[in-house]
Length: 131
Image (cartoon, rainbow, N blue to C red; front, side):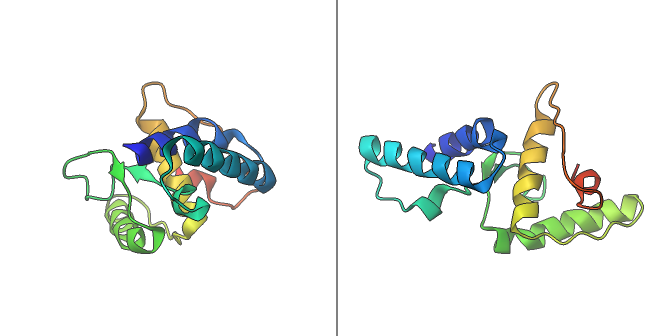
């Protein structure tokens, strides 16, 4: 439950910060506050990139669960991409860590009622493909 709280807090607040120094400061402040009240003994690196989604189980149950680390999640995403490619024009994606984080954010946003997002970046960075 606490991992879900962290994930949602980061999605609502940290994702709106625009540079690494602001996100790092938010991570440190969150970690310090959490440790002072809950004494979980977590390292900062253990929770700053916790991801949740409903696409890891292959779409069987559609439960919003904590996702595996990106290196384990890559195989599942490749399967989803292959399924997409059988029904649509072929798309080649490389699922690196930042890409997986963005994918989980976009999936979360689009599944909400009236969910919308403005994806900003340079041309050819994969915004449309991720959406």
